[in-house]
Length: 128
Image (cartoon, rainbow, N blue to C red; front, side, top):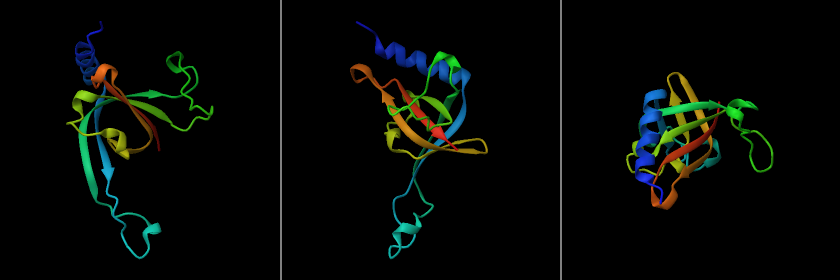
């Protein structure tokens, strides 16, 4: 039987050693003007988590992996890996952006790798 707790610790150690500090944020869902909700939401932040992420290019052939969606279209510019041990108990699959220094990445798709109920790593497909 695989030791997923040990694997989660290894993932965190490798990401922390090779990544850079980012802030993952979730925007508020209250419209700026309730009479015109199509104009967008308030700029309030509903939640944020700071931790370390590793970014990988989605260029064809990088790491020998093709980062394609099920319909064979490429939507993200990069993929960010974030250790689930750094999520502060929050569900980051519902978050909207990753701030990396002066760059803000929009999260296109998020997935949590969690075998046997052990939360290992978040995989974020991001675009600018």
